[in-house]
Length: 251
Length: 251
Image (tube, rainbow over all chains, first blue to last red):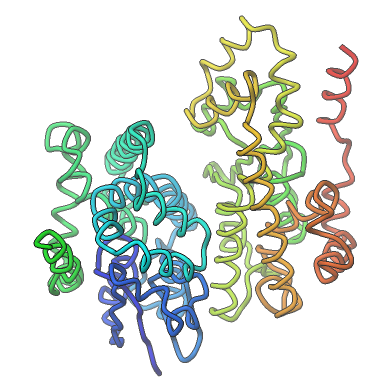
């Protein structure tokens, strides 16, 4: 059996499968893809995922894309230590929360992440090289995002709307954790992993929405998840993005 | 056992669970929710689904929302006549196609549907009544959409971008059906149901993208699905939306 994961830093979307693999105690080969050096758009990687996006799981030759689909796949194939609730109604609640987090919250956090961080990378690349890099990005939506941050970036209206959505995410997370111990019910599941990929950023960058007074259950839930051995292991590696950004800051 | 479905016309999102329920031969109580008369925002309905959206499944008291989550739920609870591929990699492919259809194609078709049809409804309501109807819409995103079509509607740029995405959807559907008989592999599955909720509209309104020359496999696949007894039964009811729209046209 071969199990390989192509991933960036274990943050945001790349953390999802790493957290699930480690929680299940699975051994896998890790392939780090350097997003800030545009490796995800290199021909060798686009051969694996034509969309040029991480993470990607390759299991005995089967290529599985989309972080939340990868995690359902892992639970289908390795059902020991399940990460989906046994009760079908809780399982549906898990899927609704994953869907909300992926479709509503992730794009909102992403706008701020690109504006704050990816913009510095785009601006550091000489324009003629940047044009060539843009051309090989498979998805129009991704090309547009790179072009946006290389130019005037997002408007204040777009940033404000993203901030508002982050507030809605924090409220809805706190409500879920008021109704049950974990986001989908009584057990740690894929929707906790998914929401945890964003919640610590909310706590750090948007304390007006996520703090011990306003969202006490979310703060306690973040601490419970950070204490899990699988999450500790996932987050213990070197932060290679930080190194790249530090180099850019010097230049 | 009680199984109830709150739904609009069996088109777009409401067709998904109707198609799955009938395919599985399940008996359920149908509750028609008249979207063009704003029933989905009435207090009795918002008590069932706080988001004020159809479809909603109520199974022995458990409330399940989000059409694609409802369909996974139905397959979890009623596994006979499965609508998810048995092979985990095909199942992942099914989930990726559902995700793409829901997140990328549905919003694009929706913009045109609102511009062409819902706009006439919004304009037919007297402004003071419309203001009151707007106020009780739970989701900001839905409120904004109603306000948009009641005002200047979507810009030509937004409509063009939606049209472009419909073209991408048609291409990707044809590619999937070139690689295998059904969208996810060798069996009819939830991703076929999901894509079929849009494909006949593409054929009717965007023949430049979906026609016998350009997308022969899609055309044949639409015909195969239309011939299924479950789909025939789903689509055989009266078109109540058409009646409402005809009344508006007379007024």
